[in-house]
Length: 80
Picture 1 (cartoon, rainbow, N blue to C red):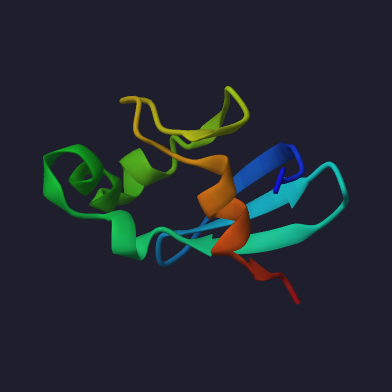
Picture 2 (cartoon, rainbow, N blue to C red):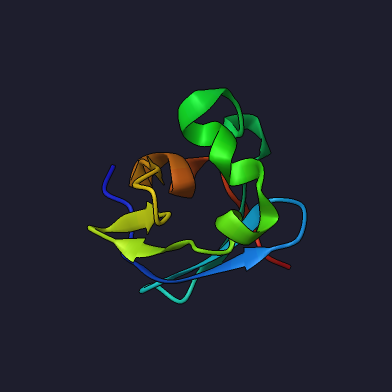
């Protein structure tokens, strides 16, 4: 399944992301299960976590960590 395009990402408290899609959907994705190991462990730093931005159709952090777009869409919950 093709997921809609992410048009905005906003970091939230407790290592969650607010994702806004071109379809006007808004979803919340919990990054907590991903924060481990050398590569993704950097996301546990709150200031680093806030560097999240949209890149290449998904979200990415300044060090190159990213999460697949289908995971963001499928494993997030609708806001509200």
